[in-house]
Length: 391
Image 1 (cartoon, rainbow, N blue to C red):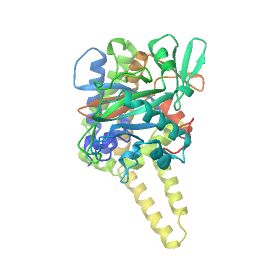
Image 2 (image 1 turned 135 degrees about the horizontal axis):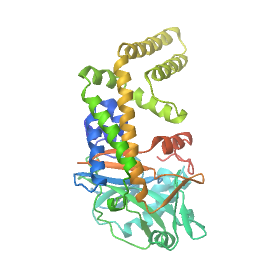
Image 3 (image 1 turned 90 degrees about the vertical axis):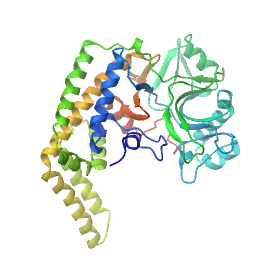
Image 4 (image 1 turned 180 degrees about the vertical axis):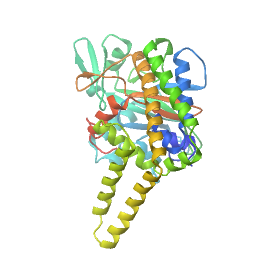
């Protein structure tokens, strides 16, 4: 079984490369921990104190790693490829052209970051964040300034503090993660709850932390959370070890199946999962040519389906618990979404922030209303505006 920290962040050697949806942690045996994290978030919204922190997840692009290299001491910028086996570290514009010249838009953003982020970065430390805009990305509409780094358009009054900072800056950035370690290889990601960064007019910094005094938890969102978190916790506690063994055997397939239900707006179910596996198995059979290879693929596909049928009740229970965790999470997202300084739109339609990240002792899970945001993002194929591969 994967450790909670590695699974939830889907990190490689402690590097933050992806975040997992709270409800999907159930599939790898971490449902209890995710439920506790959600309960902690609920407590903080109501003014309580605990060790869980919550930050807004901004829909920026590209994600960049920057700071002073722990071994060379030189300032660098990079994409997540900083953590590749053969890392792409950029100390100069020449390095950026060499490593990312195939993607001009990405290269341009990295060059802007290389020029201006040293103005706010301490002499030691490596950080990770999302680029929100450069000067050319800003649009002025009436009394609003807006930018669309990825799928969501962010709008703010021009005379607000964020509006003024955006207009005078050369780059906008949300920094959410700090790395600790003596080398790139052994660095570990930690949520940045207190920023060591400086300030400069050329860098519009957007703080992802949440002011809980501004969060409005309505009677409806409170009731929705309590109903579903109670059912999820009670039902999960009742499951035997055989339940976890059966579900974890299918963890990767279940996550991709859930994503498919987000795309087509269907309700996850055991029968739906079996249809998904049948179609997946047929594609695998069709992908090979020889009779022997086809037979081998068919055997694997049949074994998957037989395993689901033999453990049908466990899968039924898993989808019920998954649904309750998701509904409890959505209630928290509804409450947290009213605390933002920005307006949010997708294709001209008002929407919520992309989501939030709950962190407890360095363990991070994603809180996103998948029906509202993830479906559009998946249908759009990820990054809409910039289709360049970020390598």
